[in-house]
Amino acid sequence: MSIAVIILIVVILLVVVGAAMYNSLVRLNQQASEAWSDITVQLKRRADLIPNLVSSVKGYAAHESQVFENVTAARAATLSATTPEQAAKAEGDFQSTMKSLFAVAEAYPELKASDNFQQLSAELTDTEDKIQASRRFYNGVVRDFNTKRKTFPTNIFAGMLGFKADKQFFEVDDATAAALQNPVEVKF
Image (tube, rainbow, N blue to C red; front, side, top):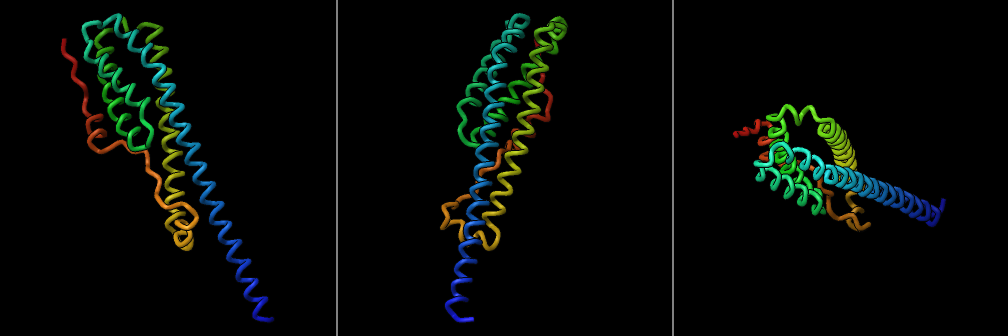
């Protein structure tokens, strides 16, 4: 074989390997975008349920205005989050305020027996499950993308191909997670 043929084979091989690396990074990047979109859809669905749930509880516990204000503020923060880091912070705050809201609801047996409250609680639980599933899928894709971007030989070409930074995981911080483990005390 001549040197020209060997060089041509090496060039073709490099082009094929480079294209495969680029395509896999693009695929993972698109999956991460799709997974993030799924999270935002579920967060929006949950945010749409919250005013109905708050209205349901307000009728029984009108004097708990601070809890309702906190839930409304946490809902707004969740809707305005645009990055996984912002969403994770808002998510932690939201879960904490919802815990307070359900603690208030616990104090009113007639509210807990209300069909409307039960239906809203069931929908909220379903939505929370969907958010967790979307979050796990998103974090899995981000893990795969970040791993692919950092492993040899892709790490050599990733920056040149336009994939310079890791994607952020959607994680609730340790302080928020610890706060969610403690029961909320409601006094009347």
